[in-house]
Length: 106
Image 1 (cartoon, rainbow, N blue to C red):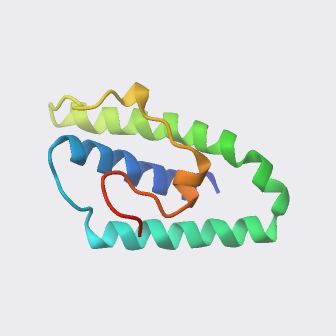
Image 2 (cartoon, one colour):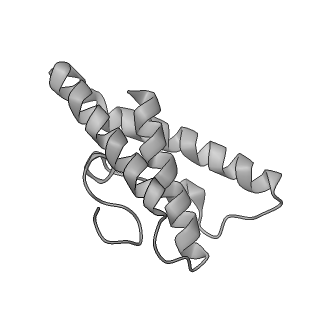
């Protein structure tokens, strides 16, 4: 489940960074990937309801990891983040719901 959460959070971080670059809408493929991953997580939570109580903690952990990876990727391209990655935080309803940064719900 951590990997699936990471896929969504990583996409949300990239979209937040793109918003800072004045990009408009996320690519259609990203929307589809995020939606497919959310559906996979829903199925996992349906199969293992006890995981629901861990979702907030898992989202927080994966957000930290995804921010570290985003920072590394930016440094590899000699870019500076246009948003403070340390301030990015996502609630579980943002990760698992229909929310994406800087765009209408999917």
